[in-house]
Image (cartoon, rainbow, N blue to C red; front, side, top):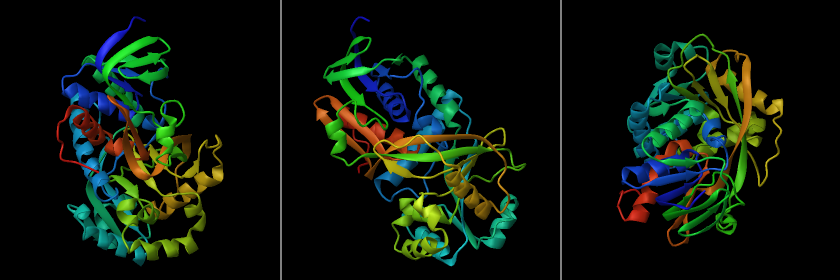
Length: 379
């Protein structure tokens, strides 16, 4: 391959890389995306496709999620990506859960949300009527897409708009403006590295400085239960997992109770998210196990804990499992970082499993940083 010159080279074709390509394209930049695989196969297609606002960490992450949701909605319409459903119902089975949700509603993050008592929730959402819960938080803010379809659709959309894709191309080294690849030299004024959970190939010492490890999670698809969910579903366990709830003082009492009543769930990082696909099937998860190199195994005991929480939250037997998979993502104390290893190069990593929910806003910030355009959103 002869050397090609672009305004922006993006390394990585997951959602973070695609988001940066879109943001650069909107600025009129010529863009190339380089990825070692033939298509995106990592966390970007293995997740729920759930663009989560409610429950994100207060401050920059919550603001980024709101902005990214707006970009998702606009892009979905333009690129022909179906929105599978909207909204989120968080069911609470314990009085401590209700206290957390009431405290959440007192923050700016609770704007537009409602706290329903059991009767109100069952009247509005009878499909969840068998569940034994005392209250439920309804959020209208979320949207859900089918990740395994949405990500390749975005890539195809960007290609139609003029973005060049170099698939099955490994990046060997970067020395701006040069990117040495397995298919020759690429040159770009600006280079944005979006490595997903690859901690070793490019700038490993910079990544290590942020305390990054990897998180493995279990996911599964359940058969159509015969009804449509009102939106995504979460439960008590999510209230001690998602930082928008878990950072509230009221969550301490809930965690103490859960440590007694559902210790195995907490030990395996289990909390519940349930979303629905166009064919009626449910995508359900997940769990969290941390290691620099997670093992490749997925014991059914962990899946059983997820299914157990499904039954507790939905109040119905779990439908048959039709598909299982694991995913991994980068994890660190902070939700993301943008690093400048050398002039003209940015290293961008989402380290909280919130890539689908925040990547578009992060990308706008990166491009603003590189091209001196103020977005008004800062960490």
